[in-house]
Length: 238
Image (tube, rainbow, N blue to C red; front, side):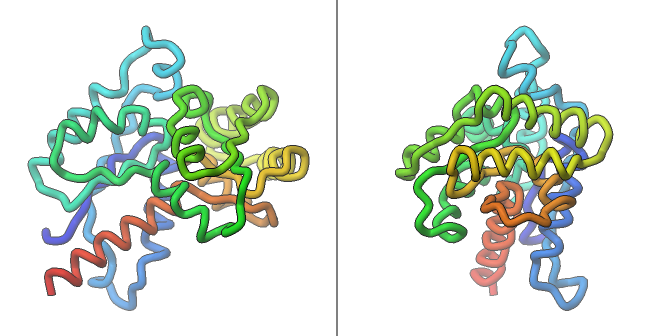
């Protein structure tokens, strides 16, 4: 198979399904052959990333993720996409295992803010407590020249409820809770844009996106970049 990439997914599976849907929906295609070539590794048994980041005595997700990267690298994909924000805690260590580039979802997401809200100054982040703790988005947001707003403990708890209790456990989205979180970030704390820094929040946006709050969905940005990279490779090989 030519001009393909590998998706390291399953964290969680519903979120990966949403990523695939966004990827296919946004691919400019008029026939079967126009869609992208990719291999999906739905590694659902990768240990919980947040549990490990907050407590290193928990099972380490890096071990199975490293195996996936090394195994798939033997197939020589054009690049890797990992539709899990919290897994990017291991980004540098995973990239060190392979010459195949790994798209950096947090980096690409913050780069894309200027296209969504050109005059944004204050950027809010909602994510798992693992992502909030590890600071991968913090560095990207601050380095890009934005003011970072980290959610209050109350908003962080609400976000974890939405991610774990609703999407992960029940495969449902509490639209009222999702909209309430966004309202707090935008109306109460005056964020110019809110980063959806967890792929379960991407699920929430897909199912309950009927709102007017300015958000940037990291998973959608990853899909857009994947399409752009493959289209560029296709053009170069013509």
